[in-house]
Length: 51
Image (cartoon, rainbow, N blue to C red; front, top):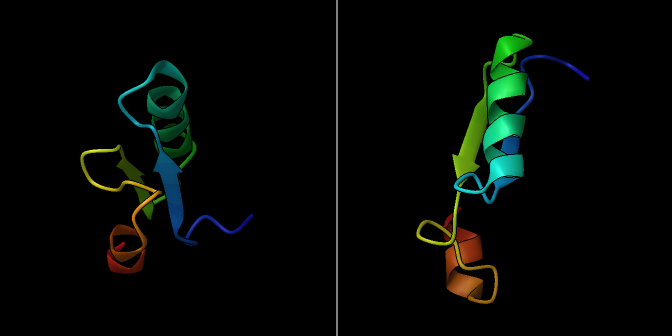
């Protein structure tokens, strides 16, 4: 996996999402974005399109 690819982690306020973002950053990935339901509700099409 290229370290400059874009990575989106959902559920960043939970333990697993938080740990994934932290681990990816520690491994040198630079385009990591962590979001949660406040930022994106997967059940709303418009939210998904905006992200």
